[in-house]
Length: 64
Image (cartoon, rainbow, N blue to C red; front, side, top):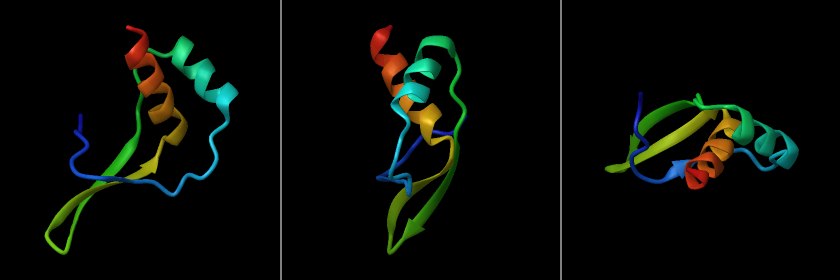
């Protein structure tokens, strides 16, 4: 399991709200692909895949 360190960088511009809400209601584990990188001495985390799961996980986290 990776922790997100530093600012999160994501190229996802659109999230399907229905897909996010469905996953938040059904899933217990949310898997995303991230890549940590250091640019000019600053730590960032790039969200490579799993944008809908990441958004659903944030909703699910607040529901518990």
